[in-house]
Image: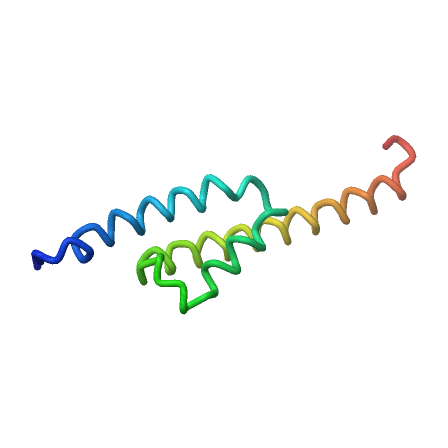
Length: 86
């Protein structure tokens, strides 16, 4: 569906640019709070529904990865304490 409304036509492009900017801005799990705040603010209409869905998926993956890294760190520290060679 093509619309002559300039705002409607440019909205997906603006949202895509914002999505790219947000992904580039998050440089590590420590900065995820800013991303979560923007994605969680449903009154912020800069994100399209699909962009919000994509970013929610990215946030979930980052959280899952951070949790796995924490678990690996705990296992490595536990092994280090019990292994004389380490």
